[in-house]
Each structure stands twice: as structure tokens, then as C-alpha cells.
Image (cartoon, rainbow, N blue to C red; front, side, top):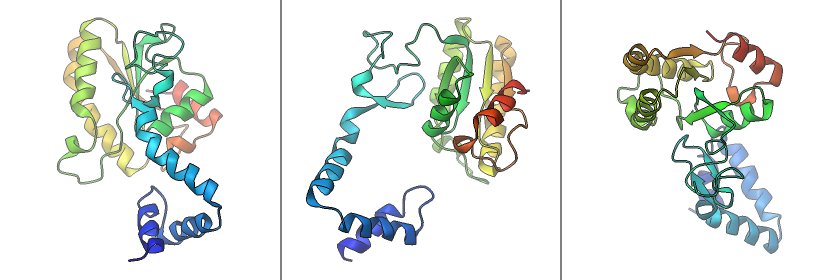
Length: 213
């Protein structure tokens, strides 16, 4: 297997990228000069060093922005989780970092987040291997026991895997919700079936958030 084939195989592993588009990426790189390629490969090598995972919400964030402008001492928390002005009573569960970024860009939510990482595939027999369920339940237990949590919003894409994940989370959350009187809500149907939350527009999300149930 030559370099073109190997790179095509790697790019094909990216979400939503098929073999043809992957090969176009490779041919694009072949047209670039050495300066571009050196910077590109350098950024890939540096990625894991520059980016950290928040110990609370599990989103990726730049290490240089650890604690953000709000808490220089909390280097393991992202700027959202360390912001004292965020509403601790409400937690929004999202599937991916891209979903969180889109919601923050829209700007009508001021609570905290938890990023599952992925959605649970249909008919998956070991869903706990796909999402951070143990870390999620531990966080809920801790916040609820401290009287900090009033509502959990399951803000997941309305596609088959998203709805499958919602059902699984509802089952896991039921005992804690009953014990601590936590409201569990899902986004309203302002989002049409099949919608990826990452690509939803501002008005659609605002309506779905407002009409959560």
C-alpha cells in the first residue's frame, strides 16, 4: 500500500468522509508546498499536547485556557465549568463537543454541560462501552447530593442513535431523579426527526429548548 492509499484510508475514518472525498484530501495535500505540509503535520502532532479534557463536563478545551478567565486555580476545568456565573442547577447532556459549541454559539443557555462522547448504536448490547455513563452518573450523584441539581436536559440529536441513547439514559437516571426530585427533560419538537444537533440553526434550537418537556 503506497502513501496515497494509506492516507486515503486514514481520512476515510473521519466522520462523514467517504473514500472519494478522502482521496480528494490526499490529492489536495499533494498540491501544497512543504511549508503548508510541515505546519499541518506539526499541528496534528501537537494536538494532544495543547488540548485537555475537562474533568467535569468532559469537553475538549485548549490547555492554555485552563480555568478560563474565571478560575486560574482550576486548571482541570474548562472555562464554562469554572465560570461562577453559570447556573449550577441545570445540566445539559450532549452527544459531541460540536453540539456543545453550537449551543454556546446560539447563546440562550447558561447552565452546565456533560459530553457523552458518542451516541449508542441501535441494538448495541454493551452501551456502557460507548458513552461515559459511569462518570455521568457519578457526577449526577455528587451534584444532586449537594443540592446543586434541579434539572437535566437530554439535548441529543433526533436520529435513531440519538433517540436510542435518550431511552438508555432515561432508564439509568430514573432512580436518581426519583430520589433527589430532579426534573428530566428532552428538547421540544422544534427539531425535526433526523436532525443533527450540531447543524441546527439558532431559531430551531431556541424553540426546542423553550418547549422542552
